[in-house]
Length: 84
Image 1 (spheres, rainbow, N blue to C red):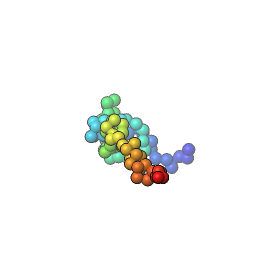
Image 2: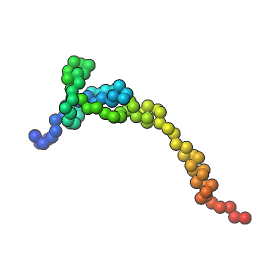
Image 3: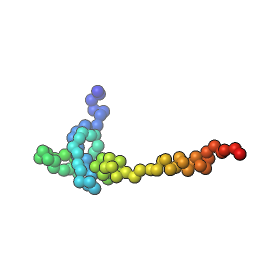
Image 4: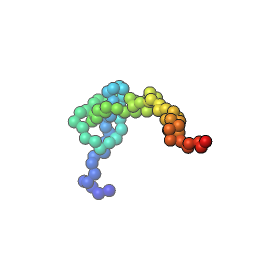
């Protein structure tokens, strides 16, 4: 890797306030906010609107789409016509 052309890759805390969820990981994202983590160290903080802790797909609260009903409706409307 060339020196001086890559952004700083450092530990960062991502926090989802709606789900009271935070994760410490590494990132190059810049942030002016900081937070004191469980290990006693201070890390940059990035606030999220949604994460895996609050997204309906991951929480199991996703609405299921009635695809079978849609297919049957399509078949009735545009399906093969029977000849008399």
